[in-house]
Image (cartoon, rainbow, N blue to C red; front, side):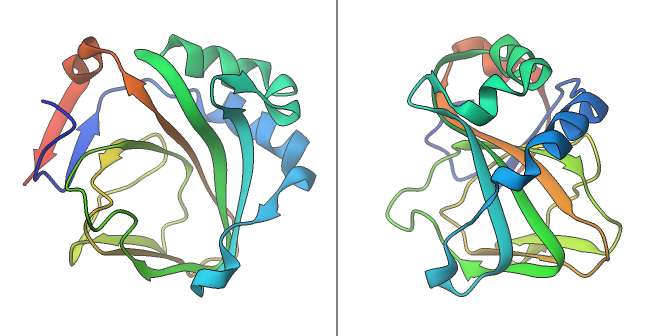
Length: 173
């Protein structure tokens, strides 16, 4: 497997410490900022833990989360964030990189209310708490959270080591 692929998503087999990450998120959630409101999204928030391999103030407060992130097979961390969709919020349909057809972002579900939905290229991504997917955001996608709970994900952009792809569970073409 490599970055340049037509695959829609790749499900990964990472043992995500959801409880620890969620507890640390709760201690820094006041640091959230609205994420890309100019693009028509509703109640989508973010807090950065790493920017260009540098840990942020939020990251310094999330020691277990940072320890987990550093255990993953990456050569470089470009951007690591908590992404939160508040109750009844959504990410409007969009394509992040229409000019590039590649697998990039590792998107890990820390909490995923049952009435949440992530649609990528017209199909639902089978998220659940603790699921990790590398998504091809070249394809059109949207997300909704129709619950009364927050939907919390941890995302990583960065340069993956070759052994990153040793933990594949499933590929969706």
